[in-house]
Image (cartoon, rainbow, N blue to C red; front, side):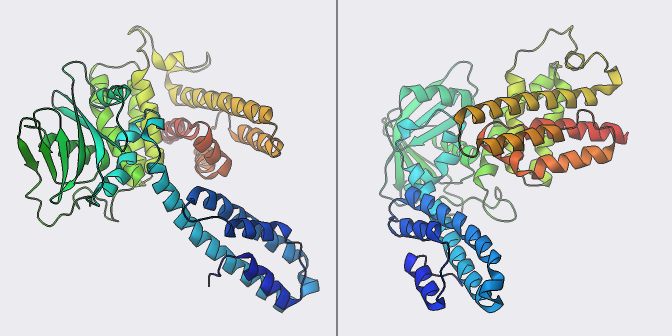
Length: 435
């Protein structure tokens, strides 16, 4: 059972036990947490993280005195610590939600240009608009049949227009419609400074494509035209995703929304690249296959999204002359034409090792207390990357290691995604060894 998270809860319990422990760090962490305010979730979250970090350390120290304390008292004290931990983790979950909401409230002008502004970061804004009191700024971009919508709390600077034009993959004929939006009469209503005809359906579809949120939309133009779309949706409520677009387990996650939006943006370019016999067609197919497998079979939208990032980089990179052989360019002199999967792994491994060395150098330069430990872990990781796995079992073990190792996960999250390219190369190598 969770305990009230307070210094007095812990110290009062120890007084009853008539026991002194080396618990200054834990007491300080509890005291710091008590001084935080729910209105400042980021500070509260930091204090909770400290409490959660100290409790396991306290349990470790307690275990060393088990014989002295006795089994019964040891069990009671351990149970008390676990109850405090349960309470801290529950509050941590709540604080994370509040911190995420607070992040959405930050000054929009400070947000860097990123596709996330059109996808995951718009979802909490659309939820907030449903209160019927909030008004936000909107910018609609159209080019041919494509439309993109940006909703922000502050005035949208003209510099954001580039983000929208990229989203619609505009070559020419780009139009921008400025306005504001709010929730009126059970519909997300856009009041725009342009003629309002032919916009509602496009805006509604763009919001669905970008956020997976299905809304009834109304557009009021400065020409007096008022247009509606989605009025025949029956019982469907604004801001709630349609069951046709939701996975069996419930509404789409932020990661799934971002993956789907990026996939839609890249699909046409990917298909065209294959039709044009892109020099990297083999690699493009491998990356797309990996992304599809992660998303469709494993529902791992984080890995799938990172794979699409790699795909986009391939599509954006200058194509090599048609006379060059992209596969052989990346092979070592010893690689034959039938050994392209081995060469692909060597390239992916070499690139990852270079990235790891760069990360290690930055860590060393930081001279943090934990730098030495981190560098040792990175060195160990580099040693585990077999230069040429010759058997399927070796490949499978290496795949499992890359997916599960916490050091790999930390580097992918904080520095660079080294995992996806290596897994793609290993998948090809595994298939080649099975042939």
